[in-house]
Every structure is written in C-alpha cells, then in structure tokens.
Length: 169
Ligand SMILES: [Fe+2]
Ligand SMILES: [Fe+2]
Image (tube, rainbow, N blue to C red):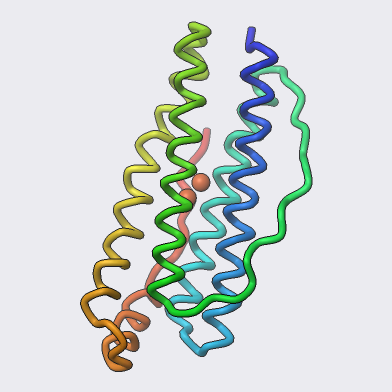
C-alpha cells in the first residue's frame, strides 16, 4: 500500500514537472522571438521531456491504485535578458527539482516503500544528467560572453537536440 502522504507528495511533483514544461515553453517562446531557433528547439525538447516526467509520475500513481489530483500550474516568467541568464535559471530550476525528488526518496525510505524507491531511482539518475547537460551549456555561454558569433555557434549546436522517449512497458 502506498501511503496518503506519499501520494500527496507525488501529486505535488506532477505539478512541479508540469510547471517545468511550462517554464521551458516560456523560454522557448522567448528564444523563438529572438530568432535563436536552436535554443528554442532545445527548450522544446526540454519541455517535452518534462511532460514525459509528469506522465511517468501520473501513470505510477494509477498503477499503485492511487488518485491523481491535478492542480493549477503557476504562470512562468515571460521576459528574460540573455541566453546565459535563461540557462542559468534553468540550472537553478533543475537543482530545485533534484532536491524535490531527493525529498520524495527520503520519504519513500522513511516509509519503507520499496516500490516507490525503485521507481524514484530513475528520476535520481535522470536529474544528474539534466543538471550536467544544462551546466555544460551555461559553461559554453560563459566562454563566448557577449560575442554574437559564439552565441550563433551554440545556437546551431542546440538545433540538433530531439526528444526521444524511452520505451515504457
Ligand atoms: Fe523533470
Ligand atoms: Fe528537468
């Protein structure tokens, strides 16, 4: 049996994942408006990944016989300054999500909920990758600074990212 406390915490996490998608879509819209199509594409893939995370939690609750409760999604920030500021903000956001998933794991351990622990392990590993990929973009952007040419090169590189969902049984 999954506890009510665990179910509530996972429902909160579904909201956080949906908000993440919303935030990255807002960043995508800003990049598209700035004609930085590669960065817009990267954010599009990022948003799709967050929707996939939300669905993964969603399906897990249903599988455990628990009730999914969807809540209002906060309005994301609309205006941004620079690509560097956006990717730094993304990194901070991913760190926030990591700490949230760590708290879920703490709760699952405390409750001896082995099924939830096993399920959450995928997210623990995923967050390591997520932080590392955003961190590398932040480093690249810091290196090129305000250089238009460097920004364009990074933009071209980020054009190739596509979202491929893993196979779910
Ligand atoms: Fe996520
Ligand atoms: Fe993420």
